Length: 377
Image (cartoon, rainbow, N blue to C red; front, top):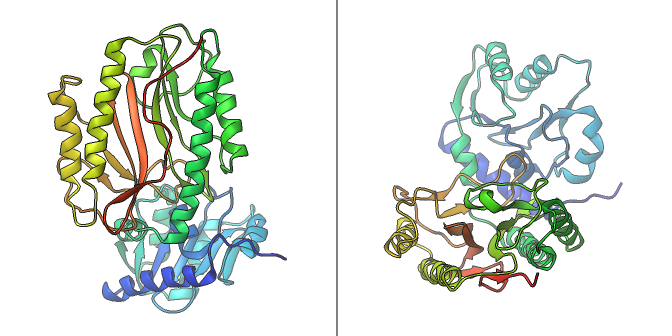
């Protein structure tokens, strides 16, 4: 059987060693990784069925164990670097089996770090595990394990470059398709097809809304038909090996005023200034303030409450971002290898990029023309 590792086995082994060093430092015997991204990042194991009950047992020394449904054995064989596994069937008491798997690998009285913030670990499962290991000590490692993924390797960023190319193909399709009388569904279908053909593992299309909904975040396509003068808010969100890159561009259907162009040009200027401030060691609050002060001083918004940067990388639905964001109270600084989606919004227009922090500054992974697009019909 041919393997389909996303990265070289040495990269996974290095990630496990990082986790184990953290466990040793915290005096823990093992970690239970429940977040699907953590399981994939540490072991390589990936299946589209990650929503079922699965997790990785990572001891402070030695190799991890995978716990998952038996129908996923093929994906374990082809994607997971590590051989040890415990498989459950649909007729099993899977929580009881999970408890036994943990006991057999780390003992009954171990000090165990747990990704308690994972959506896979619901309250019922957690209570069963805790009750089945009354002699164990548990510690929440959600933030510590998430932080390990903030700085990407060159191989990870290479996947994000591929995703960025798919994003550009999707945006080109959006602009080419949009026009008076075009259904949102038709536009979405063309965007999805373009991104898949360009290498995206998922279709998207991401945020896509028109008319009144263009003034509000996170709209999706529906039955609406585009009208002359509409703003179309579009953010394409493809991924390669589930490593994401994304960006937004503003579109007007058939006509745009001088004021529209002025607003978008102002947003571009503010964003260019904020991105230019990004480099290793710079506090996140600095470019964040450039966004907020720039938009409000230009009179484009009375308040600016949303984040301005958020980390993107290996993300599996329902997660749309990593737990590192820029806002006025942020206490972190940029580091080389971090990758962010950074965006600015005002009056229905959105402009954004995916950027990678480099040794001396940052690089835009998305490189689509930056302007207000006005359709020909």
